[in-house]
Image 1 (tube, rainbow, N blue to C red):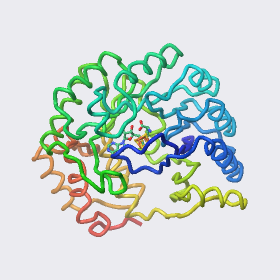
Image 2: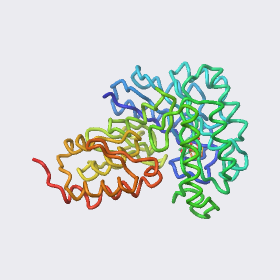
Image 3: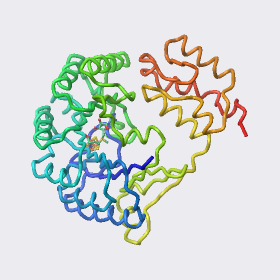
Length: 376
Ligand SMILES: C[S@@+](CC[C@H](N)C(=O)[O-])C[C@H]1O[C@@H](n2cnc3c(N)ncnc32)[C@H](O)[C@@H]1O
Ligand code: SF4
C-alpha cells in the first residue's frame, strides 16, 4: 500500500492549557525559514515516492500564509488523493482557503473542541464558539466537502447539557468526520503544573456514551474509538497509522515508520534547523520494532478499530501461536461483555471501548510471546 506523508507545523498563537504537543509560540517571521527547512529536509531525504495521503498537522498549520502551504505541498511528489490540513477556528481567511484549494488540500480539520465560550476560555483557547460556525460556513462556501471537527469531552466544569448541545451542533452542521477526544491531563501541558477541576470518571462515561448515541443517530459510522465518519469519509491517512502502513514524517519532532523501524526528528527547533543547515537529516532517534512491540501495537491499534482485527493474521505475521490460557482470558472478557470474538475477529464491545486500555493490557498479559511457542 502507498505510504502517507506527515508534515509538522509547530507554530501556535498560544499554548492551550491541556496541550503537550511539539508546539511553539513564535514570531511570525519564523514561519517562512521553518518552511524552507522542511523543504530542505524533503530534498535531503530524497523522497520521490508519490504519497497516497498527506497530512499537515500541528501546531496550527492554518496560521501560515497560504503561499507557504502551496510551497510545502509543491516540494512533494504529486498525486496524493487525500491532503488534510489542521486548522484552528479564527485563523481562516478566504484568501487562505483559495490557496489551500490551489495547493490540492481537500480535507480540512477544524479544532473546535467545544461550541461554548465558557469551555473554550477554561481550556485556554483563543476562539469563540461563533468562530467555529463561521469558519465551517466559509469552508463550505470555498468548496470543501470533506471537513473534520475535533471536540474534547471533559473540559473543566463542562456540563453535560453543554456537551449534549455540542453534539446537537455537530448533527446540524454535519461535517463529514468527527473526532471526539476524552480530555487527557498530559505531563508536559500547562495543566500539569496546576490541575484543573475536571469531571469525575462517571461523567466521562456519560459524555462518551452520549457521543456514540447522538453521532450514530446523525448517520455517522463509528470506525475508531475516537473517530466517526459519514460513510466513505474515514480519514485514509490516519487509517495508515492504525493498520501498520508506512508513513514518513517531515518537520520538527515528526515521527516516521518504514521497513519495520520507527525514527523521529529532533524536537527542538534550533537543533532541527542546525542539522539541516549542516546538510544532515535531523533524525534524533530510531527504534527497530521487536516482535514484542509489534504484537503490542497490533493489539492496541486493532482493538481501537471498531471492526477489530483478525488474530490469525497477526499470529501469522509475528510467528506466534496463542496459548490455551489466552483463549480462556478472551472467554472471560467475553463473559464480562467487554470483547466479541468469533474465532477469527477480536473486537471491543461498546462497554469495552470505555475501558480499552485495561482490556488491551489484559489480552497482552501474560505476554503472548512469553507464553506462546514461536512457530518456526
Ligand atoms: C494537536 S491538536 C492540533 C490541531 C489544532 N492546533 C487545534 O488545536 O485545533 C489536535 C487535536 O488533539 C486534541 N488534543 C490535544 N491535546 C489533547 C488532550 N490533552 N486531551 C484531549 N485531546 C487533546 C484536540 O482535540 C486537538 O484538536
Ligand atoms: S491544541 Fe492545537 S492550538 Fe492548542 S497548543 Fe495544541 S496544537 Fe496549538
